[in-house]
Image 1 (cartoon, protein in one colour):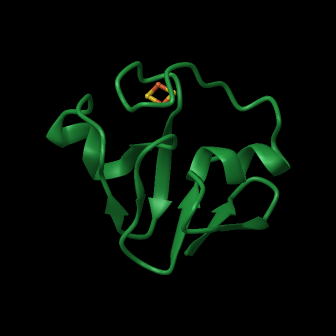
Image 2: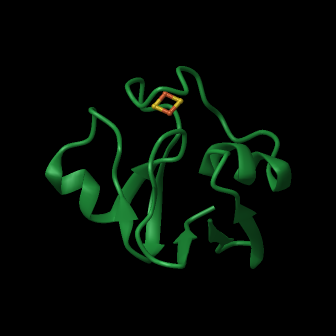
Length: 85
Ligand code: FES
């Protein structure tokens, strides 16, 4: 498990081991868009302001991986990620 901080509101959501970051974020922000939920469409891509990302998608370029993630499949490699949301 890890936590995601939503930068614009300062809200913090817990992401359980059994759920995606997308699912957890949508509890706070139900309008957060998504489509495939399998890491290939890019709809759920968001900027990450801090924290280490555990990328599990097949879509993003190395450059994009520097500061963004796909919320439906990727997770945190640190205790907390801060998202530009
Ligand atoms: Fe398609 Fe996340 S919803 S990549």
